[in-house]
Image 1 (cartoon, rainbow, N blue to C red):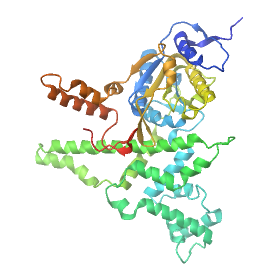
Image 2: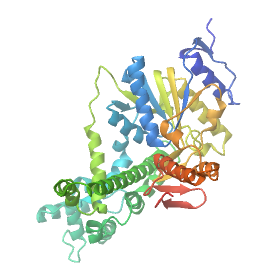
Image 3: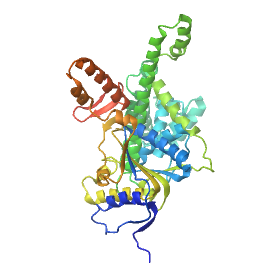
Image 4: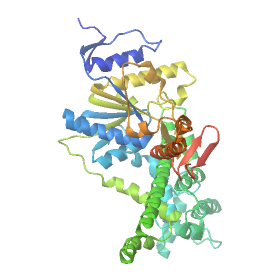
Length: 481
């Protein structure tokens, strides 16, 4: 006779943590987990500085598993509570040259709602992009039917003009496309929106008047695309598909991170310029020439660079069948599967458990069960990650570790990345500890301020970053003192 509680998959150490977790569910019949595989490594709970640090740490973890344990890519699964969390993982894996597949879904930039948003941005960046125009001219529906669009296409052929330009001309008083009044009004609203976002000469010729993330957010809002997905119902359900909205919010975060990278690049160029003051004149001229040729950074140039960086995603290396690929999946999709190594990403309040479970004990138990399912997919290696900061809709937010981690206290090994370890203590607390500490106290205080600045910068809190303060709300960091 085989006891129903026997588990032939996971090691004793993994099952001990999983069992401690699931025992908190009061509506579940008690069924102790009996491991048939004794010993094993304890699950690791890894504290990361932010989602970029988290993704890089997971990519390194996979490399170490291959080098030290002989695992193949196909032996590893990365589980997320919501699909939007896959973006930074995908980017880190591509940088590492690690092949991956997204189970039961598309890669981040291939998802319908993300492609729709990118099509709007591509049309804003280049009104002659006919493919982008065709994708979103009537999404959301705006009263431009098939007949009206065929007439616009005919006008474009007649005048050898891009589709958007033909639509703009179709709004003229002489109505060259022969549109109905209703269609002309709809076309006029669409054209007005695109022209307003482009801001005429300012968009093309002046330095970026706003951050890229703000532009992306404005396009999502004013185009009606976000409202469209907020009201669209998930198939077979009565509620909106929240994952689509989360993916759109993650696109704003991607733009925000691109903003920060731009700032760092500009600061690096400035530092290089200062260093070149001491170089021989001819060598300094050679080094400065490329930067001068680029001209002023405009919002249009920044948007195009952002879109080009996304286009490079399609150039990722093909999967080597002999090595397989890392699987990225949601916890819902993980049931019934098993892998030698599993990482579960984002154990934070509001993510896992999900925010909507806060007021419902039943939903909280379901969130706990989801984590339990993910943990028991792992045969030998289990990594649980949480972040100090995470970017949501372009804003860095301080995170609270999931209460589920506390429920497994003593059964998981606590770790932290170097970046997280550098910034865990409050810099003001460090300054208070040092100030006035005998001779040299002032010098020590200044040294601590420098360390604090470095720590905040390591955490991504740096000039140009968008942040949300619990007390003062949203803002942009101008200076770290």
